[in-house]
Image (cartoon, rainbow, N blue to C red):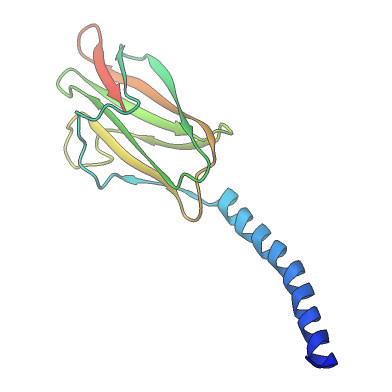
Length: 153
């Protein structure tokens, strides 16, 4: 290798050492600041899935807050709230680990009929979801009778 080639290789290696960390920093910034997107879930709700299901009772005007831990490098979570639509109407609010409000969802968000299911996918416009405890708030908007049973998966 000639002296000029060695010099060029050294310059390229040094440039790579300084440029790569800067580019990685830009990627991390995009991951952390990606916009949260909530869309109706494309999968069909399967009540037989066990997962991390929560079953509870709620009365009119009552609110229960549930926590869902999102692990590092998670790009999407599926949240499904179900209840008997004939005995009440529930709502779901979602909050990021830093407490920032993501959105409020009703029975008609994921379909054109009241079916007692709110089934949404939460993801980002780029990268991964913020890791930590996400809050899923269930609100008893309208309950006929003393209470309505619901399931949160």
